[in-house]
Image (cartoon, rainbow, N blue to C red; front, top):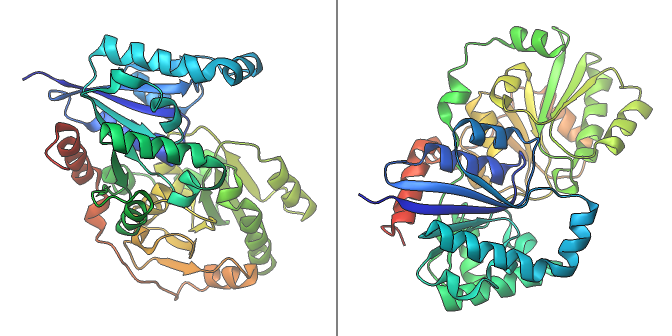
Length: 372
């Protein structure tokens, strides 16, 4: 049986949820049937996800191996031509049959032209549709409309509500739902106690650890997270804030210092051991302003953590009673809920739907054309 060559095209390959998902797709897909290639717009050399791909001998092609100021200036002037040119060369030289796109790449792909003929095109919407295609990103929306019209672009949603939104937005009726999956065994079968992980990280043994995983960006709402932590610390002096994520944390660290909590937090970045780090947490707090279907919230549930999350997140991400969802209004109410362990939530989605072993079978059906 001839292998089906698949390009996973993503704007960069850091350690966010979309990148983690792509990493698991190419790592776990049936390599007898499919030959995956990861193509990125710009290289991300320090990424833990990238390191895992390299260890698994997955080919990675960077359109821009380096992403510095000079390259940014050059790309602003000539990227409209150069990126589609490079994509055409890659597609033709690799004899690609499937191209699965992620994040902000549709505007580039729409300019590739006839090289896309005969290729099955797929696009996963990793965030709420309005944030992906609305406002300043109207170019991505127009590119999606063009690719749907000319190349039968297949849209993929992360949950049913998102599928309805995409169908309405693009006047289609065939958006496929592929749930965000996780490698369940990585989060459940860990021979590691909380005490062991805290000792390894240098966190006080008797601390009350509030955990968060997510890049330092406005969407993740770290300012509100710190406000909640300040309220918890007033009641629990042994409170400790453990944050895992890349990006500029200067503003957040300054806020913690001015609040007198400079010795009660830790920031970890570029980590591939989030499953172990979660063992050090007492509670997982996730106050995002919006999300597609957050992998880390699902991972936290599979880790057995009690979770306090924003009600801006779809309920379809909740698969246990350990999640309490709150509006983003009063940090003191969040703090009270964190400390009141009797409060429970409602499970909305069967946990098995998030099992990567189930998800990867759906991805294989999609790539082979069995699922449309």
